Image 1 (tube, one colour):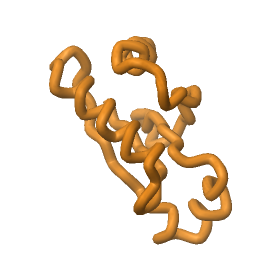
Image 2 (image 1 turned 45 degrees about the horizontal axis):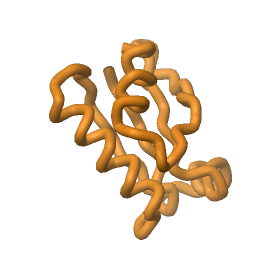
Image 3 (image 1 turned 45 degrees about the vertical axis):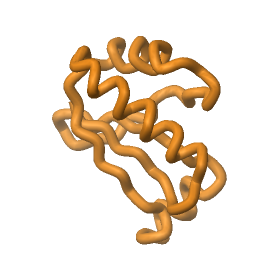
Length: 88
């Protein structure tokens, strides 16, 4: 599974989600690759996500992105793991 995280530097919500994704991966229950995209590096990403980050997307086999439901920052890691299992 390929995940894309739209983020930007010094975004505490983004850092929190990255930490939770790393915890899920360390459990070895879900295998995924994570690409982190800095919205400041691409004007289209910035225009689309500047008020939405962090935005987590699933990249399909056809290289199409599907936005995953927004993950509340205070939710436990297990909830994120459950969400990802639905898409794996």
